[in-house]
Length: 79
Image (cartoon, rainbow, N blue to C red; front, top):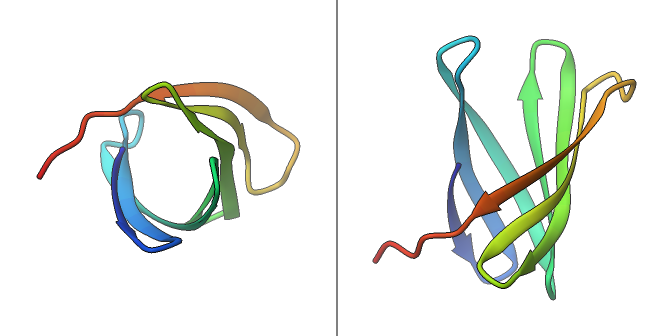
């Protein structure tokens, strides 16, 4: 996952290995909470979690809302 921050707005992409493509994401940060959305053919999927101790950790929800999985991304600052 690659993210860029502009105040409370976030944009970027993640690479979905199964389909071998980048998926664009956008979102908002409110304190330590970060909510990202991605438009996929099935609708809008969501990454919702907290930024803590160099991690973005939370729950991914499918566009249909019938699948939810925990995730953890480790942050690396690139300047």
